[in-house]
Image: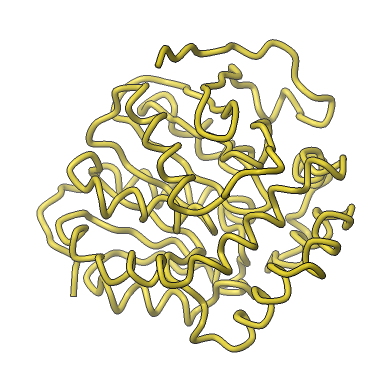
Length: 303
């Protein structure tokens, strides 16, 4: 198959050019065209967002790191500036396969994965099958296993993945309001961030990816638990965890499970931050990532 890269010229009005001053690119993958940015030169870092967000959430890190590193951030199919097909799986496996297409197209090797929210499931799915392609892993407030052992989270996932969930998730028009509730310090939720989060979900047909992702997560429990069981494949990869401790979604319990699996890894706990540490504490997160990138690699982190 011949793959071409499209350079996207116009940007939506809800994308602030001063905050997101990057060249738009896209690549045909399974499900449609996937938007991504590719800024800077040097050792590559790939940033993976979660739901219902997109690569915009990493803008502070990319602007701070692109002079030293090559920073690549895709919008997964169904999110951000990528296509949002109504008939596609949205599973972590298929999103990981799309990630693999981007990695192969850009000829990336020994790159660092920075993952947030659902991006942790997608990135880890890729990593357990391709540990030789990865140099480091950074996880921020996300999980790579099913939430079946958490009754509250399991109930929410079951409702969200059903018919009622479809009506709710595709008809709901203020996703930015939901995102704001996950902030530890809501004064950090700026008008710029609100517009950028709301923009990709302004039209009802563009919200289908949110529901189909919830549905895919509901049917991927066994798959994700198997990914976690296969974490030995990542035994020689350095991990770093940067955690907003006031996260109502993936809080301390989630961080502890990661740390039990990789007990020697560095942990940066941000006491006042919620689900989006890179937005609430961008300077702290940037410094933590920069120090991790510069640290020598000589330790196995798997417990």
